[in-house]
Image 1 (cartoon, rainbow, N blue to C red):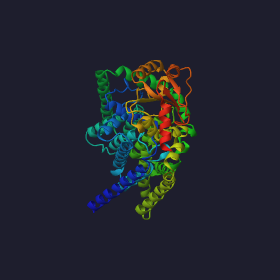
Image 2: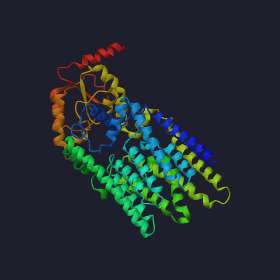
Image 3: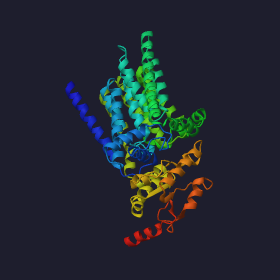
Image 4: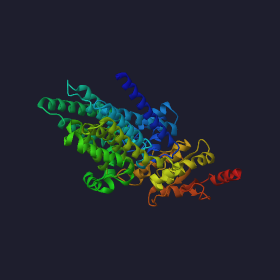
Length: 510
């Protein structure tokens, strides 16, 4: 019987993994948003000898760039590799979700995995593309599984090392992970009783903290060794403080209905309802250790989303693993309170909620992918779509050795054309404004002198007083066909007749 149960579990898990892969593969041709293409471009530049922070401007920790670097060193640079990254970390998250509840109840763990399979690609919160939150979810779900599976026996060193390493690795994707580290530690401590267990939990928390400090110390030492620490510090701390603003103001604003549960989370409302009901009625109102840990995980997610103060929809992906876990645990909690056919009844209830999640997700699969990008991102989505469509034209009008440059943030132009940018300053907001704008403007001007672009495409940003605009007008002129690269404004290097090249392409296509 035990072997049959294990075989059944493996079959269900494989089917759920296949469903996750098929859903994610459906979106493979959707124009990628600028964070993902930015990670891919920087990873390619790193493979070509450039250094993050020194040559390549960004204020994010290195985790996402290293992830893309590793995958692109093994696979082709393009949309399929992005898909591979997405499915890999989606399945890793599923493993963490299953492991979290499998010791509590195997069927609850499978229901949680099933919930994740359906919601993990929710496009309305941009979960169908592998942004940093997907990576964080994989590591935090794994860390949470170690805590939930802690037996309370022995030294607990294995739990501390496993959770500590995974939380620390998550922080290499976004530093806000420190919130999860604090909440997980508090939850682990308060959910045990007795002096011996409290002391044991404190020791485990100490090990977890040591691992985090140690790994970051190693990283900072490496940054010193290769000579990029000063640049890293400027971006990671000085610019990040400017970018995020006041944490307390962000928190007050974030707890408003508009930002706490935004309208784009409508597709997971059934799971939110199931999770809340489960927490309220689990163990007849007494949370117990498992309930406390799940509640603390939920609180940590709320704070991680709200504290940065930006409220981008992709931040809300952090809710998805804990909602899947809470939903599976809710079904387990209902079972003792059902007198007749408790197992069949909870499976029926799980099927109803899973069906509701599928019902909300199915319409997203029928939206043409270009339209979906625009629906998700608005005007930015139009730029993502245009970037993908214009890439072939860029490759036709330019010789292989010639550069183009986008004054904006449309990294997809480089990604889809597979052309290297002439500068690592591909994010316009870094050099337009903020504490590092003067430094980065000088870097940009130096880069563009060394790798002079033949074509410049300008996104609709207002910066007439910025030095880069003066430089542009001195060295470039607008293309005669103003619609050829719409919605971007196209400028040709003076002395290079791109108008004739464009006309030749147009004539040959007639």
